[in-house]
Amino acid sequence: MNSIQRIPYHPPLQPTKQVKQATSTSFIEQLQAAVGKQHLKISKHATERLQERNIMISDEEWQQVTDSVLEAHDKGVRQPLVLMEQAALIVNAKNATVITAMDRLEAKKQIFTNIDGTIIL
Image (tube, rainbow, N blue to C red; front, side):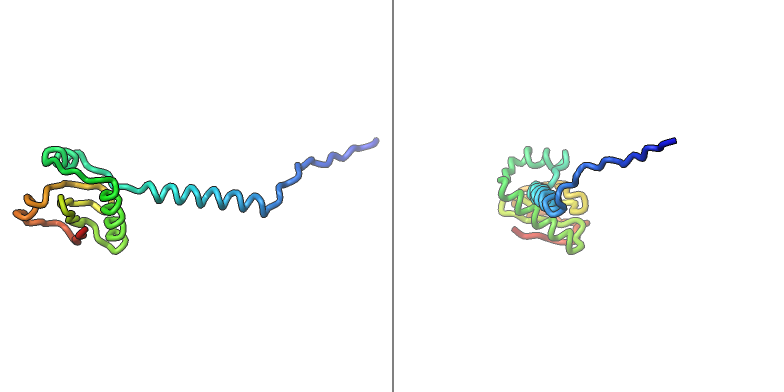
């Protein structure tokens, strides 16, 4: 009896260097895109307060607030008060969520409790 041995066919592999380079570039691009899109969420309560008090915050200012809150969170701050020219915001840094907002005139008359850091922009 004659037996036939079969050799499994494996398609040729791409050069390892090219595969790694394509993956690395793709990963870096995705990481940069994800980091660039970080932003704060705004609670329903804070959204209502911003609208009621007619507080306008530009995209650039929101990005400054976001960057500052993320930096504060990295330093252990859990709930900062963010003082801006036109507004005062209380933010939950862990959840990256604006909890409430008021204009600066109203903020002068307030006592802020349950905050553990202040960010002045």
